[in-house]
Length: 215
Image (tube, rainbow, N blue to C red; front, side, top):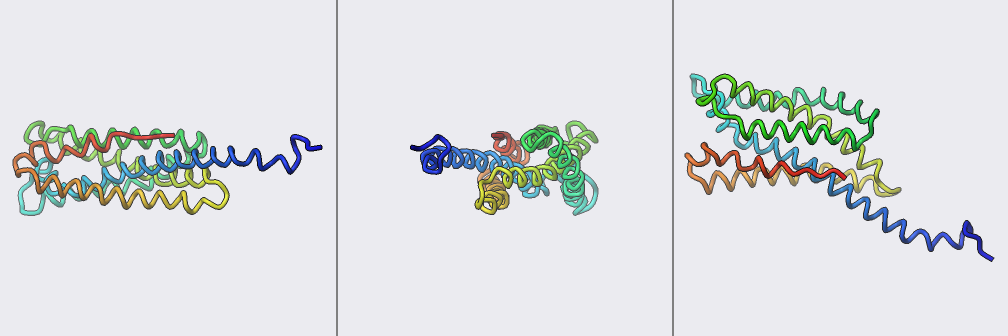
């Protein structure tokens, strides 16, 4: 006679549990990879339009001054990333991985919105480059925390024998989003006139990068 705890009863339980685990892992992959991909998309779009952003927000004398200031502002996002990784990583240890992913999403969305909605230097003066600088700091802080938290979340959500597969989606999503960001910039620059691109075209990727998913 078989008991509910007998070994023979286990196969009848493993099938639905395995299916549930597979469904959960798919949700984790989609949520984490999409959120991570959209954050890298934001970075790529800025780098693609760095020359134009320099012209609109950092007008200075000299042939390359605006471009250098634009790239310096872009680089600030990488300088702040280690701090974001430490702060948000510690927060994730205290509050959990999902709880730590939400601030990274909100901060990146805020930074991207500021870049996409800030009037140019010709319209509001010095406030324009300061807002862009602040937005890049938010983006860099967010991205620094997101990479570690999302990687850990993927690893801890993996079933035995699938950790490498799940964590690989973190890097795969980064590469795919960088390609998507470059493709978006390429399409805009080759389909819009110079005036249209400068006035509104470069802001088009902003709403694309807004949707986020957290499982």
